Image: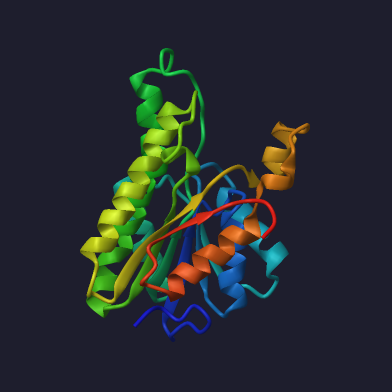
Length: 243
């Protein structure tokens, strides 16, 4: 049975990583509006957990939230934090991996450390969070794990070779995970934003850009909730513009 995102089972919660980013708070608010207790996992900087909480409460004032600021590149830290959430709230039934990061540079000038850093930030964080909750989901026979890819992973992106490789790795990991989980009651999916996401940071960085084809954050939230409720769909491309 798929996870019923409109009505959480007693003793379960949803987790959102990258909760201090532009998309994470909206994902968390949408789940909270549907009655989910939500665990927010933000970055390791001081105050990031509180900032994530405040961003969600601005969107969903009645949200029931737990929060933490940790580095998900640290496997042991990820495991400890999700164990703490489980002890305080219950079982994780939904994991939305919104953690990630972008950086660009010509292939001739970026070094191996630059590439490795993007792989760690985009892929390793997803792997560690997923591994922290997956055994429990499998034991219960129900759960949903989501991650975000990028259009750069499937179409030419000059100057973004490292980022494209990192996001392609995320997509490949989620595809294989989805196949591995077939028949277990747990399913995995990936959303591919096929363009620039309409966020305050992107508008500030590109003040003269034509935003008419940018992707509304609300569209990504809708895609995530759709995938949670439809285990037969493992991937969705999300485009900007009208329609």
